[in-house]
Image (cartoon, rainbow, N blue to C red; front, side, top):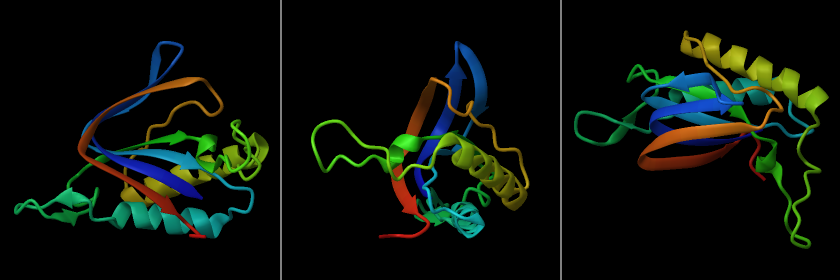
Length: 149
């Protein structure tokens, strides 16, 4: 499982001109599911994201988690995080799980994250053409892998 996270002042996702999810201060998560991902990957990622200290404390040091600062989380499925572009100029998506595998895992991840954070986690629409709008805070952008290569 791979997540590109961005610390944001605000973010929203739109599908066909309709806002499907929006947050204020918090984290925007672009979530990629790999063929071999399991429930353990979802658990690890949800816990890591909830505890990751990337928000400033009173001294301006990144020492607070999204939970510590009452932040929100917006999750968007993003199969392109598993692009393989080693050969040629057209990416291959072979490592990305197909929709029938990745959609239930993405939905389970969102439920796990909601339980861990104790708050709703808005999302985009799985498989839809989405427009993601954000104001990156920092900027702080990190890539997390549940099983680093």
